[in-house]
Length: 609
Image (cartoon, rainbow, N blue to C red; front, side, top):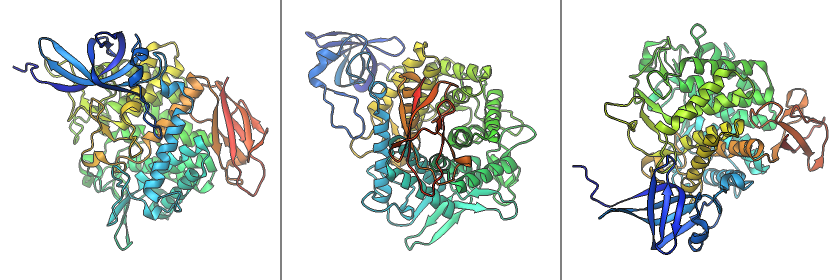
């Protein structure tokens, strides 16, 4: 019973142990040390990892040179259960052109080129830009695989617009291309005009879920969420992500209106979502009473979760603090990470954090689809963000929890056969089980690969002597760049199968949806560039800004791209409108902007010390 007596195709990822050109046999060792033997056939072909916008980098004629011990490869082939199980290789993808080379890290500009391609694709898909002016009335939440849109009734979701705006702002900061700044600023203005609601009695700002637009152009505002998990509520994460794009745009422009909106939205969090008695933020509030305790909230009444507590930090709060230096936001970050490290670890019961809670912080393990299940990416996201704030406030518990997660996840949420991170798994093993069961499938989502890559990159940056952090950063990034980039139609795939083959069914075939909009893919490009160049490879990085006259307080532009170890960076060069400019604080990472009634282009070179 259950004998392996049929052929099937799959992926083996790992490192070459030997290659015999005469027999065409390749030895491969997986991430966790298991060994395989694969055979090249007359039809086997090979390529190099291919970035967006590149031609096909064929390596079929270079197999003898590349198949050397230690070389990372992805070998896709077919298993034949004959007198012994044979594995015949259909194709190979190489992570680099030598055993110690990884294109994503060793080629300066890899991620900058990638974010440029992604941002250009979304500008084309959404607005047919630059051929036509950017106009957000044409924005659609749903974008199909090739970038097409529907012309009938459509929905514009606040969060997806904001997430795309975030990507455009990041693309401008790395490339200096005005098209992306235009997309970021117009998107921010559209959000302020169409999706913002100001309570005239309290001054609080909250954001509509979105608006429906009919074929005739009529607009219907949607205050409460139409998404199933949050139906008929105001969820915290929608308010959180409404700020993601505008706040990142604020870092570029200093537009005081954006800052005012952010301040009043944070007031909303503090007054309506925050539990001042027991700590943390509630996940949902009622649309009329703005209370988290209404019976009509149903399963979301007086609940707390990862999104309502932790997502403040990566979505907007770190960037708001970097842009302003205001103590209020630093204190809020400290409270966020103290709450996470106090309540989320659950290591007596599971190798995964607990993600959903009742009012009193007891575990909620019956909610909806989550039950007693773990989202692998949320664990990785906690490790990544703890290390970000650890650079500013080096509490031992932040480092301890981040390292704990990084040590556990490769054994319980990682694919040691093929590389890459799984999606949702059971938090607890069943009887006689050694693998945490997948909740629905063993597919891999683009956003969870991002969390894994960034977590291990930042850990590697902080602890460069740890081979384990480098190992999982390399493997995760290599898998993502080998299989998630859509070199035919642009952008990245939502999901791939465990084997790396794109999964193009249902909404998972889309490039734009309730869950996807030029955010995680561009955030990955932006922060991978920051961590690799400034922490790991010690290379200078150019950043671009276009501040409004007298926008930033005291005309001080803060240019630190992310929270990196104190004293590790300096401004080595600054230009304004192409001319050298010297009024900057190299150690403080600030530029004193000139008095002017015109906007200026500021190009700053940040260098590791």
